Image (tube, rainbow, N blue to C red; front, side, top):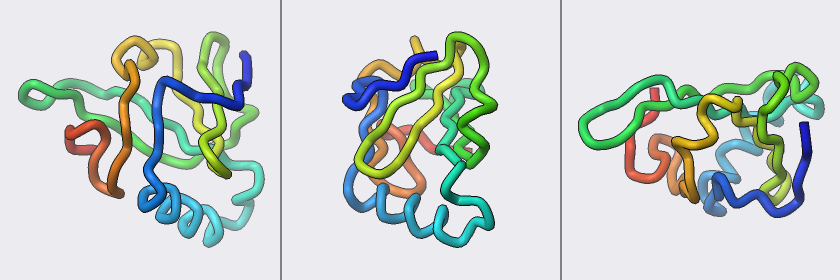
Length: 100
């Protein structure tokens, strides 16, 4: 696993980052958690996603780990190719597709 400071797979807007940071602040062990993003299927012409917090140390082999602002992001290997240059612009959307 490699952590990169410039994370080009997924960018988070300031608004969405603030939502993530507020949610992390309410978690008991928020300091050790990362935002995990997994593609779970398709919805129309786009993808559906699972967004959740989990321990960064649990990232599987081949996962991309990056930092966008103060948010650590983990994307499992099977989801990386489905997220080329995605932008999470609001709490309920990633690159224009609904999240589940």
